[in-house]
Amino acid sequence: MTMDYAREILQGSPRAVARLMSWLEDEDERAYPVMEEIYRHTGKAYILGITGSPGAGKSTLTDKLTRTIRRKGLSVGIVAVDPSSPFTGGAVLGDRVRMSELSIDPGVYIRSMATRGFLGGISKATADVVKVLDAFGKDVIIIETVGVGQDEVDIIGLADTTCLILVPGLGDGIQSMKAGVMEIADIFVVNKADRAGADQVVAEVCARVDQDSHIKVKDWTPPVLKTVAVEDQGLEELWQAIDGHRAMLEKTGKLHEKRRERICNETLRMIHNELFRVVREQLQDSGQLDNLVTDILDHKRDPYSIMREITGKWISLPQHQKETS
Amino acid sequence: MAKKIKIIVAKPGLDGHDRGAKLLSRIFAEAGMEVVYTGLRQTPEMIVETALQEDADVVGLSSLSGVHNYFFPKVVELLRAKGLDDVLVVGGGIIPREDYEGLQKAGVNAIFGPGTPTTEIVEYIQKNVRER
Ligand code: B12
Ligand SMILES: Nc1nc2c(ncn2[C@@H]2O[C@H](COP(=O)(O)OP(=O)(O)OP(=O)(O)O)[C@@H](O)[C@H]2O)c(=O)[nH]1
Ligand SMILES: [Mg+2]
Image 1: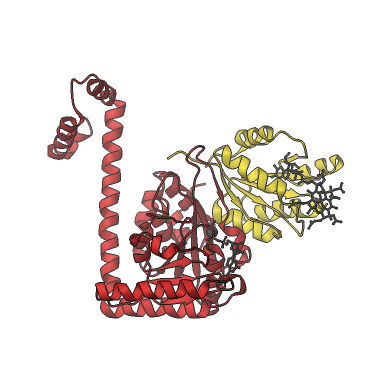
Image 2: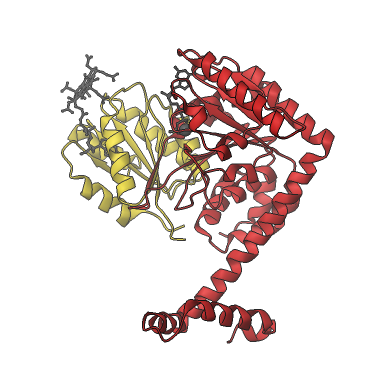
């Protein structure tokens, strides 16, 4: 049975969506013609990033925020990323545990993804999976990143609004947080505000935000909110803040700018990946790579001149010769 | 990118015994699979929707409270109704021998009781999982 995946997806088949997402994760070539067809239906969804340290309550918050958004009559897509084991390649994807009841809401589609060796806090195919949900007609798409520590900030390249989830009891965590992580937040959320020390974290973050505003003038001062995700407290306020950020982005033209930059980076990255794949395949299949590595090991050649030689050859050759060289 | 076996591990009903399910989740991940653990108190509808959205190759059900004869066939029935008839369904937990045949007739592919070496479970899945 051959199925017209693009049509099925646009007509609302979750099964076609699910299979396309698997192909994208596997880098299976069957995905690309379908993506080409559905691409013009993307760009409508609003994309949220939920990030923060492991166990901060990202999944619980995603569950409750989704219910809040559903009450506004909007549909939601969720992409929940968890780490793959670098040793076995396997993964336990546990985010759904906090979102059980959403799985039977027809207005919600949840997909769990493993990082598969990708280091930025999301996986390589996350951006593609978001596009599928967008074309599928989800109004809001929430990306839950893996529990991040320091540098996993790829989410800002993907999300329109990024929420950084903090919790009480980080000690002097805010001070020690790397600048990069604090800077990705459009909205700060201090979750587990039922625990002692929440106000202190809020005060520290506010001080930090205030400092930042003296260093650099911005259109947006990130609000600092308190939530108790397990008790569904503070979620309406969070949604209002997200809406406020979105309104600012739209009014100032920043949303357009952001998306333009995203498309630019994405396009370059896709070209990069494909070029690399083709060149590597040719070098490997012809046995040339093996010989080159041996030459380098024996100090007959150096990798720098080889890099220039090979890229030079590929860039100057007319297309039809590249396939056979 | 190599294809990975994607498996749902679910606890249907009100059964709170989750040690086996959690242990198996880790074992499957160790074997290189991507495991979606759903947690406790799953209805058959939740399990089947999860399998659908995740494009799961395998659904693993764990029951230690004697509700397998209702829940396992129900999950198979709903999977079939959604067109997911190539999904491998395996189960385990406290399941009396005399129930095995009925469950298998209802479409559960295999049952593994307490004391089964986990390597046997992993091998069974690797051998019987569908191609995508
Ligand atoms: C530990 C335990 C508990 C712990 C559970 C802790 C937890 N979070 O899991 C506690 C103390 C909380 C508990 C409570 C109860 N328990 Co209890 N418990 C046990 C006990 C001793 C061991 C279970 C266990 O963890 N085994 C270890 C794991 C690794 O083994 P496993 O789950 O069987 O998994 C293996 C296989 O079955 C298989 N497998 C399991 N799941 C799956 C899934 C898939 C997909 C596959 C492929 C394979 C597979 O692979 C595993 C590896 O070989 C059993 C007795 C027994 N010997 O089994 C009773 C037992 C299950 N409990 C029982 C009972 C009655 C209860 C209570 C109702 C007692 C009470 N009156 O309060 C409560 C109910 C709790 C609840 N909410 O459901 C009965 C169930 C009787 C029945 N089915 O008819 C048992 C059998 C004891 C008995 N002989 O009476 N229990
Ligand atoms: N006290 C309290 N506990 C919470 C709150 N929100 C979440 N939790 C608990 O924190 C634990 C972790 O929650 P998750 O939602 O799984 O956290 P997470 O950030 O998604 O975790 P990872 O995905 O593993 O990084 C769970 O036991 C939740 O019940 C809260 O507001 N207050
Ligand atoms: Mg989580």
